[in-house]
Length: 166
Image 1: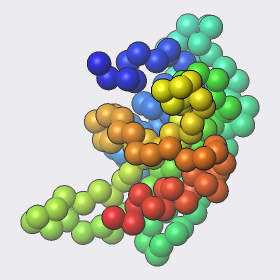
Image 2: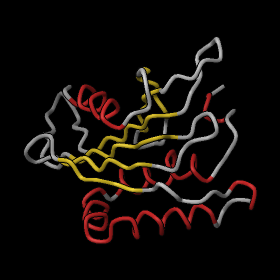
Image 3: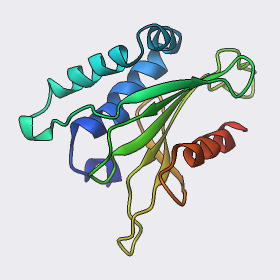
Image 4: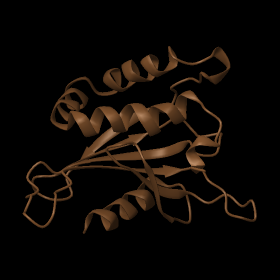
């Protein structure tokens, strides 16, 4: 059974695991344009849209929802989204929306111009909290990548940079 189906549903989880990845993977240039133009207003709009599909007890305040744009390499951008503090397993602390529009597609390899990597609130087999780096692909499949020592933005960003080196 897929782990993501066994975790309690919430507005925070649906937003980070479905709404943002789906919107970004399918319209990355437009997403980045709107984010840079309208910022948190743009993010809040989709937060509210996700909330309209949920029961009242699954809704939470978007307090803490924020973003910044970083350009680690020429021709690439990372929208680093800070999410409301997670309370349930599988909710995310941060999400990195990576847009590399100039990646080349060759006969042997299909390019990944978009990538979505999140840092989730997770627990190890002993029940200890461990921030887990995961990737959400274009079909919204979740792939665990690795855990990191603490849920800090800069530590997550370093993990993101390691993942996109390939």
